[in-house]
Image (tube, rainbow, N blue to C red; front, side, top):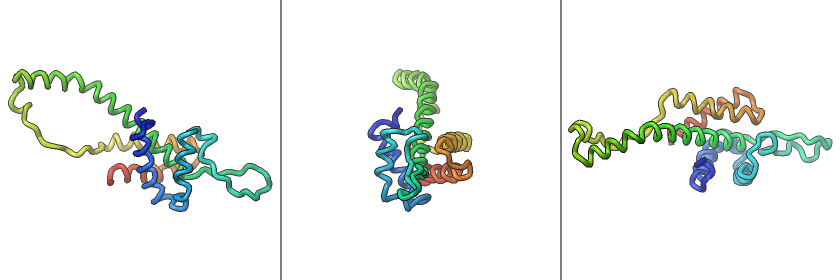
Length: 163
């Protein structure tokens, strides 16, 4: 997926850090370390765990860092958006090529040739709901409550739509 490229990883990092600043600022000192750990192992059963108390009774008590969950959620969202974009390109690609050929041959109607200018890409409500579902599903895999997962998902959506 695109999120595994250098550019994609940078975007995951930027979005995740923005969300962590808002939701778990106490984890900023270990953000880069958790990001590296996640890059090496994204399994919710083994990654993102921070020892709760190193002087505990010897039991391996761990808590999952919010940073790791946010990174996983953002990556899942970007993978979802990449897949959806590929579907759109495949579906609309043939029409775009046909239109371009008609343009080159001067066969399009005048209205088809008028350009409306640059439009800012926005998400539809249905797309935002899908993004939210993808993010919550990924967060719950890390064992956090659905309520906390939903709050994190909304923070990510806010970052995606407002920045």
